[in-house]
Length: 180
Image 1 (cartoon, rainbow, N blue to C red):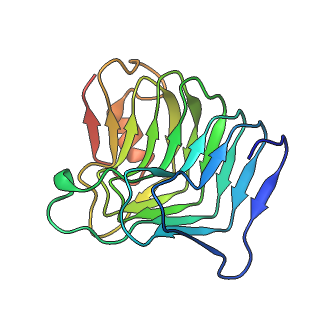
Image 2 (cartoon, rainbow, N blue to C red; image 1 turned 60 degrees about the vertical axis):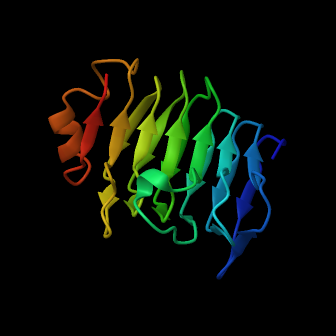
């Protein structure tokens, strides 16, 4: 999606079924929205469903899931709902559902944004890699995630992650893996 201000909006039961090893939605322009879609795949591909490379992206009211994978999630194919490119600013993930993925989202260095009112289950959790992401109002389903939010080494101390107790409380008692 390379045109500023575009909204990709699904209607009743709109589904994108990934059947190839590609990133189906690549956002490179600013002010792009992806709304009301179901994204899944026929097999787990080692890709994300949405890659955010443009500023002010809004990912809202979507359901993103992969096919079931056997065994412990540590051995799953690394399929992700969303990945930010380095330095992407002001993205918002709002009211989405993510499940049966290795990770709902991976936030690359110097990315900034908000993750609010999403539901996540049967994943290894959000991964924050030296990004600044405000998490609020998120919830966790069953089967439980390995962790809900992982803060990798090099991720900043202080706001918006400290205290991790408050971060957990603002996100339905999230299980935080603080590796900083």
